[in-house]
Amino acid sequence: MFPGQVEGADRSETLRGLPMDARASTPPTAGQGLPKALMVDDEPAIRDLYSEVLKQMGFQVDVAENGAQGLDRIRDSFYSVIISDLKMPDVTGFELWERSESVRAGSSRRFIFTTGFLEFLDTKEYDLVAGKPCIVKPAKIEEIQGVVAGLIREIGSGTA
Image 1 (cartoon, rainbow, N blue to C red):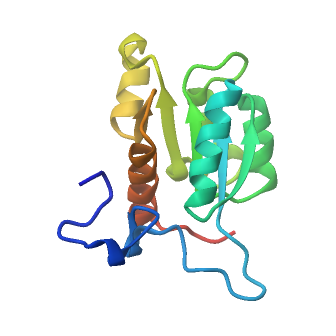
Image 2 (image 1 turned 120 degrees about the vertical axis):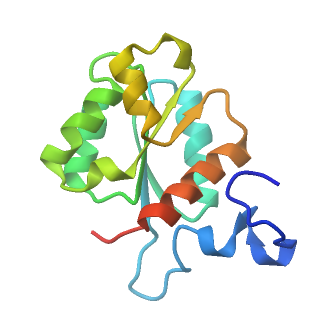
Image 3 (image 1 turned 30 degrees about the vertical axis):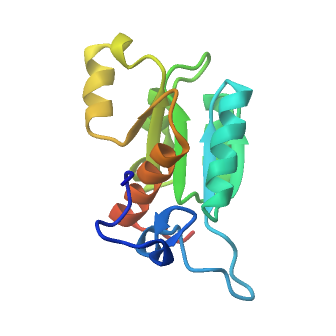
């Protein structure tokens, strides 16, 4: 069983490995778009991998290669899920999270952090991560799906 899977669920109750109740949204109907996700990471391979996983989960995905671009994207669009690397040059994932509320109310609740350097976080950073969903790189696809599904279950996919 992987994170996000319902105990005792059989394969017919899952979609792309996720429980039916954990999908990002119901399939879009005419005039209804896919829920949006934002992937912010300075590593192109990581952006591409996470973006593909999010697309397979039913999200329309935007990307940003740094925190400053991420903040611009958050200002311009509503996102059901925002995945951000913690350690980036320019604007870090922490700074992006802190600033996000000033450009779009409620956006900070939609963050999932990702990092390959969990052991190098300072006390403030560690305290922040302890209270937010976090994916430690390298991550398995099922781990990414499970954390995203858990956030959607907790807060919903929301609306713009």
